[in-house]
View: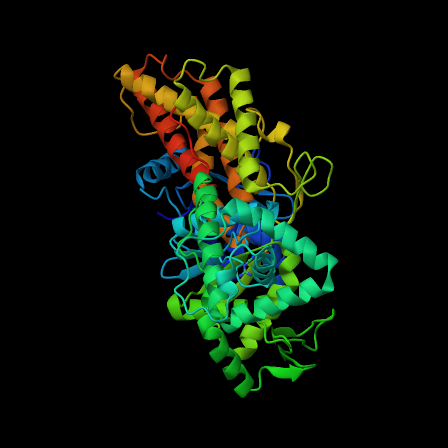
Length: 587
Ligand code: ARG
C-alpha cells in the first residue's frame, strides 16, 4: 500500500503539473494546525517565486483542480497561499482498513532491491563495554530493525575492537605475571592448550592493570607496542593467546547483547581483515595512493576546500603496526566483496567523526567502496543527572551488565508501586520487570535525537506516565487486555470505522505510520518513531476515554471499535518492535 502523504503529494503534484508548474511543489504534509486541517501543501509559495506569480492565485487554481477529487472533504486556502486539506471519513476509513489487513502495516519499500551493512556495537575485546557502546548498540539495533522493515537487505556487523594496542598490553601483562609461559616460549612448536589461561573476569582485572602500567612506565608501553606489532605480524604464541581473549570475550558479549535482545549477523572485527591488509597496503603503495611520511605509510586526504586541518590517514606505523583506520579501510574491501552493499552505515560516537571522514576520503581516493555510500551516523553522550558522562555511583565506568541490573531493579520498584503483577508467578513478574527495565533504557536513549547529548534520568524514564518506554508498554498491554476480555465474552471484532473526532484523529495517526518509518530511515532517527508511538498512544487513550468499547450495546459499533483497538495494538507493537522494545502479555 502507498503511504498516505505520498498519495496526497502525487495528487497535488499532478494539479501543479496541470498548471504548468513543477510536480515537486505538490509536497503534502500533516498540518501544523490540526485544529484547522488534517494536511497542508505549501508548494504554491515556492511555485509563485519560481514562476513570478501571485502565490494565492496559484493556490486557487491548484485548489480548483483538487476539488474535482472525491477524496477531499474540505479544501481551503489560508494565509499567503497555504492549501489546507481534509479527507472524507470514507477515504480515511478505507485506507485504515487496507492498513489493518496489510501484513507489513504499510511499511514503505524504500529499501527494495538494496543492501546495506550496518556497523554498530563495536565493543573492544577484553575491555568492558561503556555507555558509548551501549548507545551504539541501542541506536544501531533500532536502525537495523527499521531498515529491514523498510525492505533493505541488512547485514549487521559488531565490528569488535580486537586488533589494537590493548591486545599488546594484555599480552605483555600476562608475560610479566608469568601466568602462561608457554605462549612466550619461542622454542615451543605447539599445539597450544585449548583451555584459555584467562577467564573474562581475569581479563577485566588484567586489562586496567596493564593499561595503568603502560601509562606509568614508558618501557612497559614500548613493550606493549612491540607485542602488538608481533601479534599483527603473526607470532604464533601471541595469535593463540589472542584467540583465547576473543573466545572468552565473545561468550560474555553474546550473553549481554542477548539479554538486550540485540543480535548481529556477523561477529567480525578489526582482526578478521588481517589476511587482506598486507595485499591492500601493497596495492595502495603501488598505485601511489599511500605514501611514505616520517617513516610511516599514510594516505593524504586533505582537500582544498577544507576549513579545518585534515591529517592524513596513517596506514602503517614506523614499527609496522597497523591502526584503526587501516582495519576500517580493509573492512570496506571485505564488505564490498562479501555483500556489495549500497550503503555502509557506521553507528559510532560522534567524537570519531574525523576518523570516519579520513577513512571515507581514503576509500574514495582508493576507489574501493564499489557502489556503497559510506555514512557515519554519530551520536552524542549519555550523561548522568549531574550533566557529566554517565558513571556508576562509585564514579566508575558504567558497565552494560550493571546498567541492565539497575534498570531492572528500578522497574521492579515501579511495578510494585503500581501494584502490577502482585499475584503473578515470580518468574512472570521477573520477566515483566526485565522487559520494562529494558524499555526504560532503550526509550530514554532513542527518544532524543541521536546527536544531542541527553541526561539519563532513571527516575523520569522509568515512570508509567509521560513519554517513556514503560508508558507505551502499558498502553499496549491495556489494549491486549481489552481484546482478551472481548474474546472471552465472545464479542466479534470488525473493520475499524470512523464515527467521532477521536476515532478520526486515531485513524490519521495510524495512517501516518509509513511516513514516520520513511522519515526515521531518512534521518537515521529512531526518535521519530518514539514521537510517533507516543502520539499514537495518546490518541488511543483519548479515544478510549471518550467511548464505550466492551460496554457498548450496539454490536456493530462495538465490533468496529474493537477493530480499531486491534489495529492500534498491531501498529503500536510494530513501532515498539522497531525500537527493540517488547510488550509483555499482561501487566
Ligand atoms: N571499537 C570502537 C570503539 O570502541 C568502535 C568501532 C566502530 N566501528 C568501526 N568500524 N570503526 O571506539
